[in-house]
Image (cartoon, rainbow, N blue to C red; front, side, top):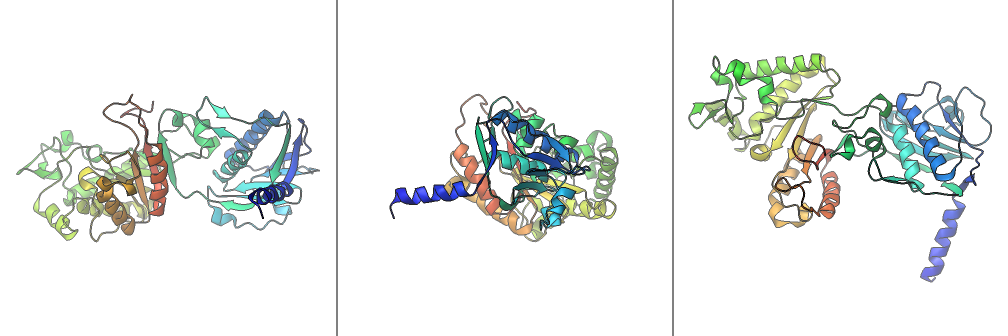
Length: 422
């Protein structure tokens, strides 16, 4: 068979798998949602109606599942109408963000987790029709006189539990939702199924135990460095039992004051100055001589205590700079998220292809062996000259896939300058 004939047959099979949908601004379809739809499911139905109208000029009506709808339906979200079709879906396995796309006779089902899953299903459906949202100001919405939809039978679930791009566009609620981001700094709200919220976002040791309050009376709470306890350019003494007690009290207070947060960051200050006291050094030696050892033991103890009253709350800490190397033995508590932040690497090409980044790949694999809840803070900016071109899109796309192969479940892509999202 020639290549041309093979391509023609493939195209014919694709055409046979298409269902006529809209013709010259007219459609017999109805968008159907549950009478008990969640805010994000209602948004999903509205977005589907809006973009189909923008594409074709057809204003498809929206109805809830209490009505006796005649004709083909676009079923958005789990509803009585979906149940009446007898569709077999393992709803629990979809979780909050998974969804299914199914064709049942003349009907199309886009349904999933009530928090965000159905909404993501609608955006997947629209992307299959050619829609793209590149920035808040620039989108590609194709114009069609005739529109057909594929025959669907597929299920999707996001590979990452946390997805954030730290940039100006990502603050926009609509752009972030349409690109399936869940970032702390995005203006996502109840209508988009919320987001992953931190308190605080990082470098929090001195927010937990401020030196201006404690150093004069309790210098032993702070790092022993260079032969003395110090508060400037320093950390905490993580093996001091009173420091642990105060940290648990502090995180408990954060939970009371900021119950909206999902993750509470107990993380090193953005400087050096790790503690060199005998107890901290002993833990380091037990963990292969690495500075991350006392940190993970410390946050594990906090997470274990917090989980007794707040099992759904997570504790976050950095593996960054001097703490980037993984410990030898200790495994992070199930409620701990390690944020590996590989600052200072070569960004010219994918990490796996760069001899200069070989040491980091070893560290990434080491952390992945210790935890199934590994996050990455990926630097995608030039801290020395923000305005210079930074042509590393090939590196970024390759490394996102690489992170997933190594079990990373959360990504923060640092695009903007410090203390900014422009």
